[in-house]
Image 1 (cartoon, one colour):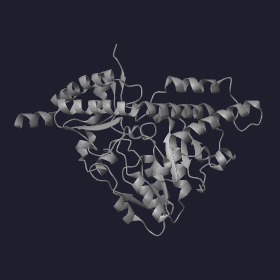
Image 2: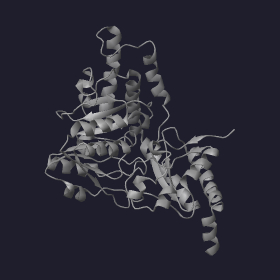
Image 3: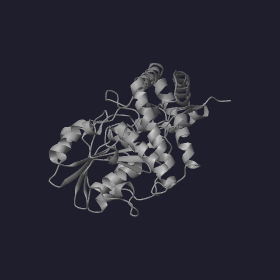
Image 4: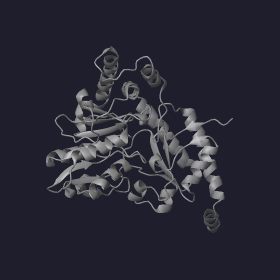
Length: 389
């Protein structure tokens, strides 16, 4: 039987046992509607507010500034559509997640001006270029904290200062940062920040949006006065409880130094691959990154072929964003960084989770070089290059 190793945690993470245990009662005996005033409702309302406290502690904000949502996409859309109106100018980047890019595109089609900032070869936005992009009617800056494909961390604190000086709203998509690096919304200086449960070992279908106090947010949904009238709809109590527990476990992990241990495993993985495989390199090398992610190109092969071949051997990795799986075009993130189309298509993302071990990395280091070598042997272009050299 094949031993299965999962190194695609930026796509989604397994629910940790402690998180599953915390949410389990809310599927059965503790089932009330958190908006009801009787015992059953108040029991679940207390659980929702405890989770709100935990998420607020994770982000360094007040509990009242947390809005629970269905996940990162809704959080991004709520922030962008909720802070910008027709006639406003929005600044974002070319490497954002599609939840941000498509939201900005939609607003651009309905009366907003949108500027898409380029990035350098490491995948970083230039704050000076952002400053030059400001206009008198700029209303919102939306720049991600960590990129989902490369793990590169953007200079959000500097961007926050620019936004404050210009009196412009600043939103950051922290979906791939939450749970991996400490987050302090006060230090960042953002007005809104998005997270998603399933990227930090809570289940799919729950997320949160931090909204700074006194920031007026136009809701996406209309109905009841849930979440202080910012997000109508009956709360997903099991999911919210799970997100709160995941936040607690994340804080405990930072105190233990789990992020440093994960960074060490990630570094051993990428260094081992580069030592054993020629014509391979790290995308975003030299830029600050979240500790769990490395994106490596393997020249002379197709990335999807490598993903399939490794999966047959029990190793799960990806070519980039799960939201873009099946796309024919090369990664918009990697091409924005200046990679050739063939190199972008030959790039693989390895992303670790809390459940991964040193043994998992050892297995990956045994499988990846031999699989790359085999695929290159089958490539006519590579054989021709090898013969000529």
